Amino acid sequence: MIKQHLNTLFVLTQESYLAKEGECIVLRVDHQTKAKIPANSLEGVVCFGQVGCSPQLMAHCAENGIALTYLTIYGRFLAAVQGAQAGNVLLRRTQYRWADDPSRSAMIARWILKGKLHNTRISLRRAARETISDSARGALTAAADGQIAAIMRLDRETNLDGLRGVEGDAAATYWSAFNHLIGRDDPAFTFTGRNRRPPRDAVNCLLSFLYTICAHDVRGALQGVGLDPYVGYLHRDRPGRASLALDMMEEFRPFLVDRLALSLINRRQVNEAGFQTLDGGGVVMDDETRKEVLAAWQKRKQDTIIHPFLGETVPIGLLFHLQALLLARNIRGDLDGYPAFLWS
Image (cartoon, rainbow, N blue to C red; front, side, top):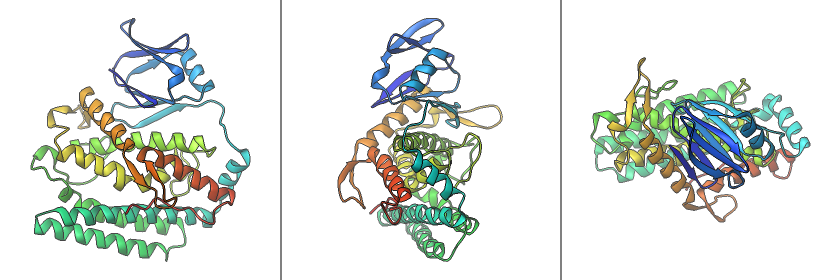
């Protein structure tokens, strides 16, 4: 199965092969052409599981700024093909220097985490107002209050380890109340705790899949403004990990990813039959469920919101690019600080 959403091509068919034919990308299965897509209409190609790709197509993507990303069948990032990086070399050099400066790194990490915890609090408070269950309301309100306390603690921490400790405590509080956000009485979608690599239940499988897709989009936005997505501040360097993309994604987890996962579950757009438990206990989605989730992700990105810092109405899918631009301006010295995305 191959699915194009906006400017990104998602390849889900296992044992398929992508090749270049003229200015097009062709999908072949068992040596038979199943689809042909003009490459000049794409900004990214995302391959799930066992999908092959010709060297000629890899070169074409690298030379034309098309992000070619490989994920496992679980949706975990494996690798990306990247050509010559665009952007201002002075910007990236400053980014690297800041990453080597503990105080600068802690400053940016603090701004990002304030955004994440603020957005988590908003999500929990909204759910608390909407629920009809007194016990759920109490748990959600307590978890929201825990986010406020954590935000206040962030200002007292001066190093990354301390900031990570605060974030870890706040996350534990959030996940302890997460099952109250699921309004569906179905054992298959009961949340008992966050687990991954691989996810071991349907809820965690859905969350991990959406986090991976979000990270892909954020990585592309960072590259688009000339930043190196692999050199972060909260998440430190690790081979193959897009640390800065993971940093910036923190702001969007509760507002965009978690709420979309909950919406898909609560509206019964995903069902137990769409998830399969593999040998070893890992849970994966089938192709139809992935298609449903990807369509919902792209549809959500077309919704609009007033950007809290710019005061302009923008598509949600543009938020990644705007935040990347604001971070780049901060690093260049055009802004005194990084204005994290704050949901209201």
